[in-house]
Image (cartoon, rainbow over all chains, first blue to last red; front, side):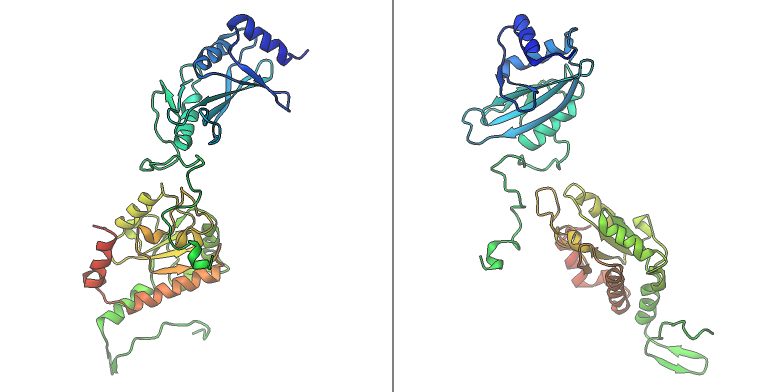
Length: 167
Length: 181
């Protein structure tokens, strides 16, 4: 017998109170937007919980919505219970002036490199991360290339400008 | 002797009974250009084409280059084949700096020459931004025939250069431009 999303939602609400806002999802995955200050408490609860055992942080990725005022920069967490085969998804947003999120390295060791990658491409500061530095790009880079304001092509290149192509 | 075997022609000089006089430059150039030790710096698909170039069908050994050198210290020719990410740039530069004089560089393929299709934040837009390049081979990837042609252009360069190219003002200025040494 499979566990429904409603069961998990009510289970979390009984134990923690109202900590998130459930969102519409077309694939049956429990999706919720979580306020920044509730994230660590919520994930920590789910990890230590013996009923559902959410013991696996599947992935973490950043997003940038420039038009979403006050919530421009976000991170999406996929957390899985391997025992019960349930996947849940949390979205957390922060303003671009202060892109700070709590680090989950204290809960999941896997979060270490994932958070470094998200920092590398989106510039999200994960507070409490033991070694928050770039992981894929070169250390000298000053931009966060996956942000929307960053030009996709190399901005220092002259020979591909429109002028040479009669544009 | 089998008539199909082609020997390198002797440089212009004075020939007499039991002696042959010519310029030292041309003799050394002749020796150098027919015994190039290439260092393959292969990072992607152009490297696969290079493997075909090395193998029996195209056989780069016909040009005196059968001996790949996998240490830069013994290599004469750095063959850069493939996309060089910006993070790889310092590595490539260090490999070049470790090579002993005289040294030549060939950029094989669009990526090594100009960044190719990868016009993006993480890819070096041509290796000539960090090291001097002697010959560029176009193509994405180039055919083995093109790579061989590139090596032959390198041979032309080597055969014509003076013995101590590194002492020339032009060469010193080039190295200064790239801030090498």
